[in-house]
Image (cartoon, rainbow, N blue to C red; front, side):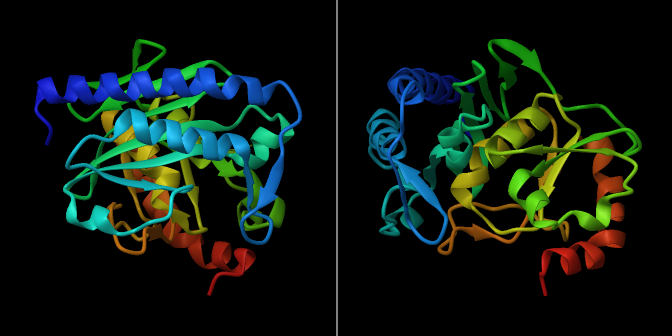
Length: 273
């Protein structure tokens, strides 16, 4: 666990990096963005690459590791106990389509645990910043996860692409509202701030997709795990997690029971074996 004085320095570094990155990416939001594809339909833009270099130079100090979607992974991070896990632009599809559901996501990991993070949605002007010691703020105001105790009437954020594919078809009659949203990091940030009650996914996500958001959920008193209840750990060799679920602590057990009951049907609709 980082000491309080060190935590303040880490949070200041994250805040500064997000502010600089938000300013740097703003021109890319005003005009046509050049898009290429890494594999299949996975888009990447000039903005992704620009932000990657900027964030690396602003954040990393001697003795710290780095894992980012846009940087080749040389695995030296595995030798480090403190690692920055970053997605320079999470929700590139939404960014390109001018849908305001993309963000810059920064996670700070110690000994495999996401302990501090920051997420900035430049399009909406939201800056989420927090640590497990200091709590969570949204644009400088203290916030916490939802205190909801029942899934009935809850708001659950779902992947826009998963819904489009029909992966959530088995939940059409669920007792809660399912709201589609782009960036997975932004979904986690909104759950952390109590702006939604829960989010989960069946599809694998890389560590950089969720490290910042997982740190924020923990900072706000929430719970994040894999669907089978196992913990979410970071700085692994493969850096790919099969799934995750996040919510407030008073809702976690009900979600676990609900997903255990519906998981076979969900996997079937998603084509997961």
